[in-house]
Length: 117
Image 1 (cartoon, helix red, strand yellow):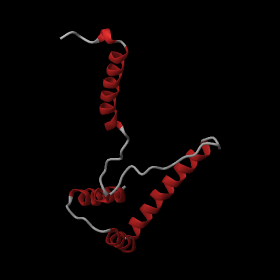
Image 2 (tube, one colour; image 1 turned 120 degrees about the vertical axis):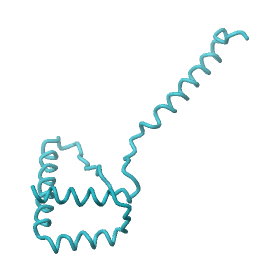
Image 3 (cartoon, one colour; image 1 turned 30 degrees about the horizontal axis):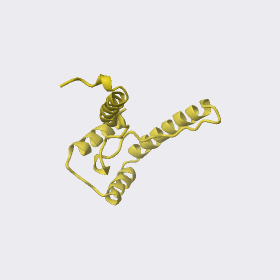
Image 4 (cartoon, helix red, strand yellow; image 1 turned 60 degrees about the horizontal axis):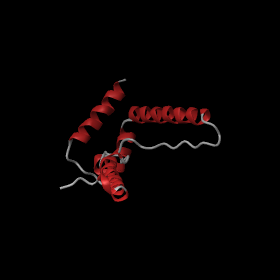
């Protein structure tokens, strides 16, 4: 439990800072943390085994002709942003254009729908 709190505090401090390390420097820091602190390395290995086990159980429960993909839900803020695009922002403008085309088509087809000025 102590490791979890320590890791969370370190991640929160990193995310709150304005530090922007390149991938090579971030990897060097990560490796040095693992070498210097064997308890941290053990905790991270345990977390990896737990995630691998969970994914293995999910894949075993899914039928054979279906595929399971793991989508990363968290990225470094310096890696291009936190937002994973899902297309929801496109729905409102698309609906606006669809309604406009529908009204245009209806009024072209049924000219009596046009209001007198």
